[in-house]
Image (cartoon, rainbow, N blue to C red):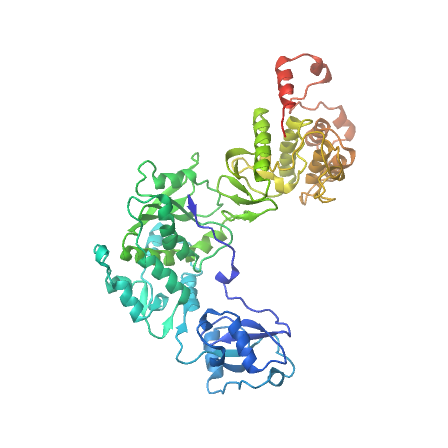
Length: 600
């Protein structure tokens, strides 16, 4: 499955505005632009040197212009409203600053705060880069409108672009696009088709938009017998890169896809899209997506699964053949019309960890998909770490330890774990007790042979399928006796004993107590908090901790401590009494033998 990762970039939602510039900042604005930018201020600079600093900022519009060709104007403008018009009006009739003038004379008291100080004007014969204006028009389409239903979505998707929403091309570039190569006689493009996305202009250009759109429109697909790998670049040029031009979002993925090469007759990409997607998107009415077989591309809306069904419902929107220039141009227009809807969908999604974005860790990168956690080890001992984890997870599976993750697959220096849950804190005492119970069940099954040693909320994950279930993950630091200290652990977040050699199960019980005391549950009772402190200070066994917790749950805080002590505690975890444990049980003896065979 190809999922278009979207990074959080605030500039894609609104113009970045300076907040209270310091005395060291001089804010400038380019004629025709709506976004001010800072340049380091120094009273010793001349206007000529300031031009060089402005040029050195690397602004796209100034890339082909010499610093000496710039005209600078002193202004005092509030950064609000439509700067494009305000800046143009402000400098009309004014003379530019002379190159030899000193900034100490222009700003004797330093640059005033919260204003734009300098307007930068390129030479009059320079083409105007309208990339940001075109992007802004794309992003602002339908802003504030409700999310459309499917009929409205199809209409919006196929709406023609307005002239000022089209990408400007020089007449020369436009003519080149229309040329049909002798070996591509079936790929005929007429001006009317090109004009659905482009417009002719010899005074404006659109830099990045032009490069990406022309590359997508002009690049022919691989041969029909090409492999999936050969098609990946082609699909990226026509889908991923077009979306990422100006629609970068908050680490969440409202646009999902599945691709197959044309020689693949065994797998249906539409069925794969249904099968691989776990719905985890809260109140979102639908996601957007696509499936592609070679050059045949179909856009879809993906709906929440019906009750009792895991697979989402998929409804086709439009299809297009990317094998022709006309088809690729139509595809880009559809994506431009769809993309403003992405943020509206993301805004309705619950806050989750980033999807499909590699997160750097000390020894590996971690990537979350809809169902799995992918760990790619980057350290020198990667193979040893994976072998060690493989042994631990194999033992956990053999021992039928509940409430843990497991290995989905291993490849070279990568291990894929399942299931993927939600990393979140409990909001109520009931949820907290459910989480603590689940962790204690794990410890009951692994102690005293194996210690987890890193029990903390980031490693206690809530199940996506059953909200009352939590599971313990991240077995990187698990160990059996004799244990060695872990000096990188921080005092206060882990048991002090884990910083010393020879620690035992008390470090895990301390971690469980820490889950209680640091849960952040607002309505946490004083009695449950005392139980958490007792686990941290008294180092009880897992059985003692379980009994104490069950006593609290069954008796409630309103009953007296004595009444609780006299009550019979349910044998929820299957603890045997001392008398029962003395009896010989061949199955249990075999189970105990397996416990001793863990190789870590």
